Image (tube, rainbow, N blue to C red):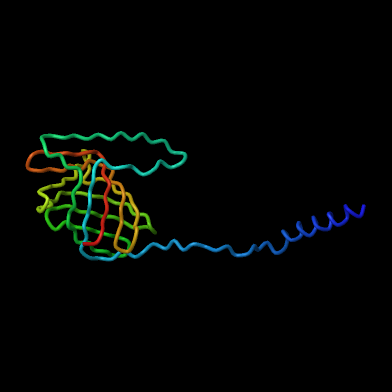
Length: 180
């Protein structure tokens, strides 16, 4: 009997300790504030084929990557100089040579938007051309702001690279935007 009584008191003390005002001690919280992206001169890097983001739980998606190469000198990566203008959460990048337009909206660290047009990298002798689906004017972009001057993600649509000897393109690309 003496043995059971202290155990009962210990159990009551433990259970009572869980009761109270319903307020638990504050747990440390990580600040996941998104950096503020800044305007300026950047390099847009496009590489194909791209790796799509992981499929969300509960959704079913089949992704098929198709690439086409014509002629020789296939290249699947290039950089383009862009000037970025930031207005609130809207981030717009325009190529220094050509009509390439990156237009994304930031929501926290996540970005989503579009890519359209074409541009050249004269030093590398490579042109890049965004090939939207019929009836579309751009391809979709998803990604994340990695710092106040860097973001990266996935382009869901056809991007074609051309050289003087041929062309190469795939229906998906990876992209990144970093300071020049």
